[in-house]
Image 1: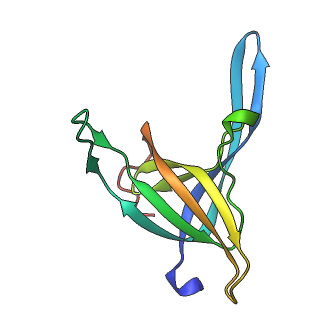
Image 2: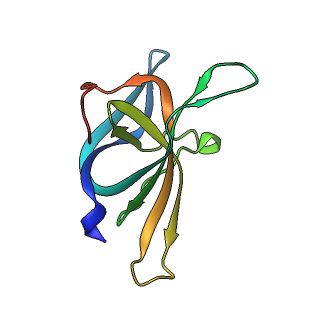
Length: 120
């Protein structure tokens, strides 16, 4: 349903190339209508005392690409409230009349967006 969706910046990586021993990754940014819901903002990790990062559940009409370490591919990133989140999984739910993708994103430590005041 489009009533809950807003436009968000999604960064899609195209691959990594090597030049003189240096890795170079290209990407493109796109605007997509998404329903983004925060599962956790910040939780205290009891074992180490440090804060853990947030997790988002994202509902979309288009497939979002997860990171696949075995294939050495970088998944899509989502800019949400000034923080980049990496796609960890994306599953198609075609068994309902709404037919949509449900994706999990996890905050990327140390990667803030260009505009920290971005609410999208």
